Length: 419
Image (cartoon, rainbow, N blue to C red):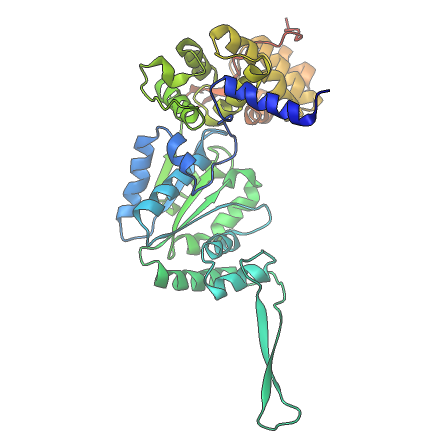
């Protein structure tokens, strides 16, 4: 009788058959202090140089990192902070993803306070907002003794939890306290600006101009459309550097594949691009094909990598040849589609994209639009961007024109291709 333990062991052995101790690909940003981040981050040398140049000045600078969805903005931010932690030990670096219901000052306050676990005033700010701290926060009061006119006793009670009413002032105070311990300054990285409502973030940025030009360095990330597009035009003076991240080239993607695999391979740390062992369990031809399909997009690269290795393990393969890779990629599109949970209209647009091969304002016709209930290409762009967010489509580089194409994945065995 097969037990659950037997199944687990078989699953682990299938991965080890590929020469790996685990599947190394991950969609989530790798932890800031993780050695893995240092090992897998690849490329972006020019962008890193531009960013680090800003830290050679005495003035506090503001950097906007922007790029399409899944292009690796979070990983870039974490790499910058990771290097600063190693090179500037007397500098405080803080990272946070922008919450949906907080202003920029409160978000920055939380990020910095979390990095000051030994500062009671910083912990008090977190506690009052209901954020767990490393130690319980108590409020001390003095009560006169009932029996001794000159006596008194101390009592403690939990501090109340309240919303920060003067976040800007509290942040300024916290930055003053931080400067005593971190004379090289404070860097606040706020990620995912593009995941919030554009009108809300636009007002938020307007309200936060004072703190952005204050005591700390700020790094923000966003998408080149929506709010970030506005910031690139109407708020040019707010940022000292506007840094665009684009897709990685094939050679860089190939090196990234080697780096990821090296963090999980058993008894094989080959990194020589010319040595076939460097991409095991892929054979070089399959590795190049995998890099081609991932389109230089780090998130798609990780999603496909996870799917391919999982499927190869299920098939109990030892090598991922081109034939095995194509078989593994057949489950990628259905997996992405299932995760996307498209509504009926979005699915109809996806099918149209598959039929046409690409969609743009120049190629789409009224015959295409009318069955979908649209009158122009502009109306359909938000759905195409939704498909891009789900890694079911990607934008081609055509200058100012928006051109979308499907991800070049093979169809599943049971999929009926649209005519």
